[in-house]
Length: 222
Image (tube, rainbow, N blue to C red):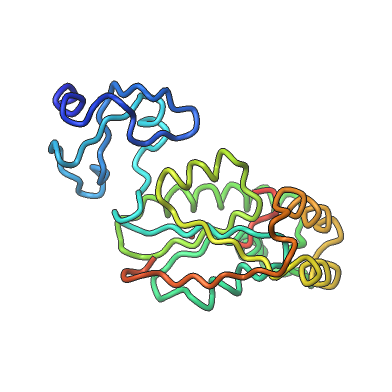
C-alpha cells in the first residue's frame, strides 16, 4: 500500500511540517485511523518519516475538530473574544483558567499564582492540547497561544488551523497591563510589538466560523 500511495500521489511529503525532509517514504492517514479513517488509497497521502511521526493523529482542518489558535499581546482581550463566539461543547484552553482551577483558595488577582501551581498548570495545558487537537467531534478547539514561536506557527498553518490575532492597539494593551496584570507582563508587551510592528496601530479583526463549528489566555511565553 505504501508503494501504491507513493506511485499514485508522488514522493513529495504532503505535510511539510518544520523539519520536513520533503522526500516521502511513508503513507499518512488524511483522517486518522483512530478517528475512523479507513486504510484505503483515498485516505492516504505520501509523507516523510519526520512529518508522519510529528503529526501523529492530530486533526487537520475539515476532519474532526476545528482548531482556532488565538494570538496577541497580554491583556488584548483574547479570552473575552473567544467567550463571545464559543458554542456549547466547544473546548477552550486558557492557561490562567487552568491555573486558577487548580487552586482551592484563589488569589485576589488573575494571572498571579505560585511557581509550583504554574508548573502543574503548564503540564495540564500540554495534556489538554494533546487531547483536544485529536478530537473527532465537530466542535471548535480554541487555543490561546499568546506569543508562539515561528516554528509553532508554521506547524499550525500546515495543519490548516485558523490563526486569529487579537490586538486593540498598544496604548490600550499597555493601560490594561498596568492596571490588571503583573508588572512583569509589560516585558511581554514590548516583545509582542517588537515582533509584530504591523500591529502598532489598533486592529481587531472579527472572525466568524463558516458553516460547521470551528482553540487559552496562555502565559505570554506559550
